Structure formats: C-alpha cells, structure tokens
Image 1 (cartoon, helix red, strand yellow):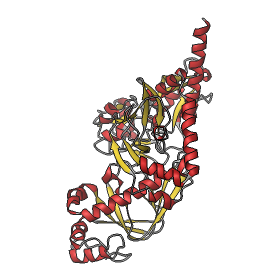
Image 2 (cartoon, one colour):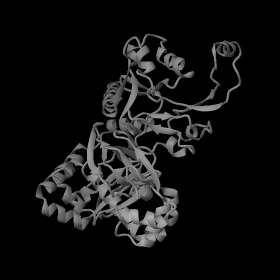
Image 3 (tube, rainbow, N blue to C red):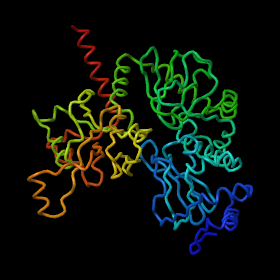
Image 4 (tube, rainbow, N blue to C red):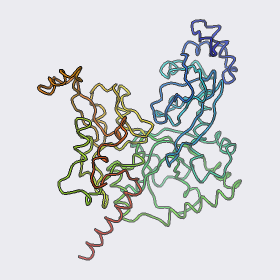
Length: 468
C-alpha cells in the first residue's frame, strides 16, 4: 500500500495487487492483469505546485494517482492557461503517447503533495497484448480527454455541454496521419466532418498551398452540407491526429442542435465567398516555406529602422552565446525581414523528433531550448527544414582566474560539438538581440501580422507591374 508514510512494495506482488485493487479506476481489472502491472510501477512524489508533465514535452510514461490531487490544464490559442480537470485518487493520466500523441497535450501540476505510480511506455507496450481490459480502459480515457481538449477548442461546438461533447465519443473515429501524407483527396465523396486534434495540415488546390489548418480547425463540412466546393487536397504538414465525425452522426447532431447547423452553414458560406486571391496564395506559400506558420510568433525586424550596415543584433547574440543564433536577411514579409532562426514549432518539431537524447525541450515560455543532454550528433541540424540550427564547438570552462587567462592566450581543444539555436535567451531576464537594438527594429510578431504585411507588399508589386 502507499500513503504519506508507507512506501510502495513492488517486490511483494500480492500486497502490490491489493493496493492497486483499492484504486477506483483499477479495482475492476482482473487479478492477472494487475499482477502484470504491479512490477512496472515506480513510486514518484511531487510537492504542491510542481509540474508533473509539461505541455508539448515528449510523452514516455503514464501515471496512476494514489494520493493527493492534480490539476490538468492546457494553453488556448491565445496562450492562456485553461483548466480542464482536477484529478484525484485512482485517476490515470499521461496515456496519450501510447496511442500516437508523441507530445503532451496538457500540463499536469501537483495541487497538493502527490504520490504517483509511474509506468514507462516501453515496458507497458510489451505487455499490452496481455492486458486487454487495461488497454481498453486507457484508450477510452484517451478518447474522452482528446474530445475534451479538442471539441472544447472549436468555437462552433462551444454551445454543446461537456456531457454532450462526451456523448460524441462513441461515434468519433480517430487516426494518425504521417507528415506529408494526404488526409483527404480532392473529388472524394464526403463521409465525415474532420477535426484536427493535433498537428497542422495544408489545403492544396492545383498544386498551390491555399491555407494552413491548425488544431481545432475542421474540414469536410461543405461536402456534407451539399455545397459546391472547388476540389482540393488536405495534406499533413506535420504528423496529424484527426477526429472524424461520421456523416450520419453529423446530420443527427445538426437536427438536434439547429443553431449548430446555422453556424456551420454560415462558416461554410463565408469560406466559399472569401476564396483565395493570387496575392493571398503567394503570401501563404511564403509563410509555409519560411516556417513562420509553425509557431505562434516569430522574431522579425523592420529593416527601414536599421542604421546602414548595422548588425548589432547578431553581434549581441554572438557575445552572449559564442556564436550568433540568428542570421539577418532571411525572408521578406512587406516591411518585415524574418531572420533565419528557430521557429519554435508548436507541433512535432523535426529537431525534437530527430534528437536521440531528448535534448531539445519546450520551456514554460514556449521556446524550444537545447539542454546539456546534447551530445553534438548533428541529427537536429540535419532534420531542421529551416536551417535554424548550427553545430558549434563546445570548449571546457575555466576552473579559476589563471585557467581563464590561459584559455584566452591559447584556446584548448573543443570537448565536442553542441547544437546552437535561438531559444529566446532561455535562462536570461532579457533577449540579447532585442536589448542591444538601438532603434526597436526587432520584435516578436504574430503570423497574421506577417501575412498582412506580405499581402500589402505583393499587392503593391502587382499593381506596379500592371501600371508599367
């Protein structure tokens, strides 16, 4: 058994199984399954306020809560923390990685002193075929949480109660789509309303990328409503998790909730009327190619504010980190220049996926940073499609003032290479490039602001060409 004074005893199988049987969510599992689960459990303890799992971190373990309470939250599209639930004794969480969600969708934080049983995916996966009841229970919990976090983020479904959203669980299909794969081909008959639960996709028409779809966005509604729509493919920009609401359930939902049907038709008509001009397509494709759509904001500068030949931002960055992490004259978006640098991709960053050491992680500020686990293997630099990572030599630190002087006279050989990328100056109270800029040229801007600038610039260019 486990409480604030008695430790977990995985070596005593009978006692361990009895302890698991006292937890509500595990009490109905067969004895044989509990007997296999018990040896996998590792006792963990967390103090009040301590983060147990962080949103966007890599999922490798799940937890069984045995004592205390845990709050579950996630960031909304505006970066605000939204409380999703309060977990108590017997609740299981963190199971998403077993079903394809490589990155955590939620943050779990200890509300009180907490005791948890931690189970590693690698060990559990080997036994899942022998744990049919537990596996089914985990999948059901995963689906329910996925609905809670996804449907609640779709404004169209805001009018449904939590119970009504949960009622859709039995009819929703979920599937994972690999990066670059086609989710829906043009010309195919509509069979479902598709909602992006995780990841990003692009709408492609006649070989041109028309729009980017983000978590909470949906598609397929026009076909289900019988509206004539130009044919287009939907392609996964990153690994994508799709929730699909079958046509029959969709039709029934609209009948039971007429305002939902009205809202759906209004959205569909607005999309048809908006269309996409050639100028908008150019702006969208530039944003996709530059990677600025991958994160919530991007570092940009206004070159017209920069003194001639000024590169203080690059120099300030290099002085702080030994080598610059941003490179000017990247991609132009109207009055903005977006330097070559990390995009802090929100969904499935290629560098994180490629790193064999789990050395690149999200901070609470949303920036990706490289930890001391980096071994200099170069996998992240090779994987980044935006050339945002440089490999630089890592030199030994000076042990004392004399050692520091000797290092200045003759630099010692490097210990190894280290990944160097913008991390928003993780661990510092300011950002070197912004602090050193004398004109305020550098700042973080939203994707929408960049697209608006690009639209204006392309529109002016086309008008000028037409006039000539």
